[in-house]
Length: 626
Image 1 (tube, rainbow, N blue to C red):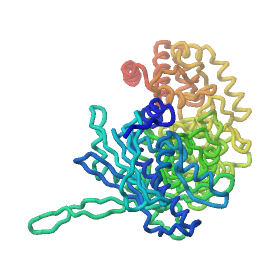
Image 2: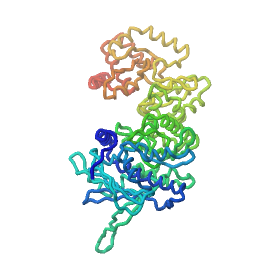
Image 3: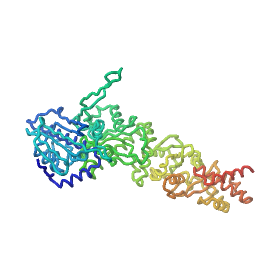
Image 4: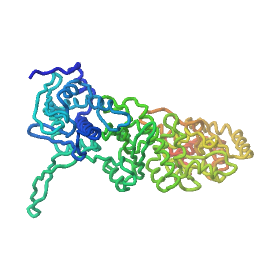
């Protein structure tokens, strides 16, 4: 029989579809199963609207088989089938979709999920096969026909024998190459996995003859292979079930199986939305972070389904970065898919879904914080850093969405509190929100600069995460109260008398302070201070970059050269102050030793490295040995 040419620029278009449109060979099975599902849907619809067509829904199914020796995969369905003309029109014309035509001819009141739209999914099978044979018998015809093609060169159609209506597709797989093993599709496990991954929620049963190793003689440890027909797909997604019919255990088991977690989720968030955009979602907040969560390898995203078919395993557009820890699925029929159904076209509806999901997650966290503080703290200890990152990322554009979700350790309360709770408990004469940053609560608590603020009975937020100070800086102020770093040299808590005394001390000893700065050129200023209580010295900073921020910049792989503008402050009331004044007048050499030692002490307190520890160690020994 003479070959017929495809009705289009077939060679170029088929080559494009096989090598460019589809980037993942695995999806060939998804496409063929989706086509089979459409055929079953059409027949079931016909049975509801045409009295001549009688069919029971439970008899509608998709069968999957493979033959290792012949290197074939067979997908068959008991659907409406195709006439010779339909084979010619649907398979002989690339990008002609029978499903789309059927959908377009339906009235607005009629509701049925038809997956195929573009008429190209069938040809994805050429990615894995050299030859495709389609045998089909229409519900409207007594005759069956076989369509056969080996690719872009064309196809043949001839009469065939087939008893029942429906379609059978046989793929003759390509031989293995160094780059790709096509034989993997002849393994039972691989086919099961592909069905589970992409087509688990097709509304009709997908069945396959499976082999099970059954123990027949326990004493002899003898096993036999038993064959049985197994249904591979779940059919009804858990998120489409009535929430009243789904137990907590059902949700937990689905989460652990779907997302390969060994522990149940901290929170389950089911949702069903109808209106401008219709979708169902099932979201989970994990109880712990994945091992790779804070690495570049981690991929955020929700599994995206439409009409029971998984379109994307991880659709990153559905989640903002600050909620990247959320796992889950979204199912909608209102999405604009591209021709391969592998990625989404620029979609207004997708943005609407993403906006709704972001709002749903945020409100759920707000409710958790309000109604179950213990659970929220557990969540925050795991993912709080990500929320803080979201506060300052993108120049702080999302800070107002997140600022009431973040917690900081309160020095006074000795627990994590919100910014709202801090402001609520502020003293009447307090105008600013005070904070201090450091490696741990214990280290911050012992900072010299903390003493003055605590003496006034003001609370201090202790910031221990590297992102904390950047988040605070992005928020800038909360309920008209500005944030103030207690380690900033411009901290203004002294009385007028104290300020005047400090000013006089610095003026009277300007030469001494200038001499100290000449020895420690790293600091922008050396000065006497009355803010210190028991400590002799400390380092403070000027400007927008604090000492803790500098540590973060210094830890980055690319040297950014961003440094804090530091000030060495000396407690004017401490005995060390009088010692310096005496040494400056009587022993300049000893004065220089004290200057270097005091500066190193201040750096150690601030958690900064000492450039010359050996020299400082010798100087300390020289001083204490006298």
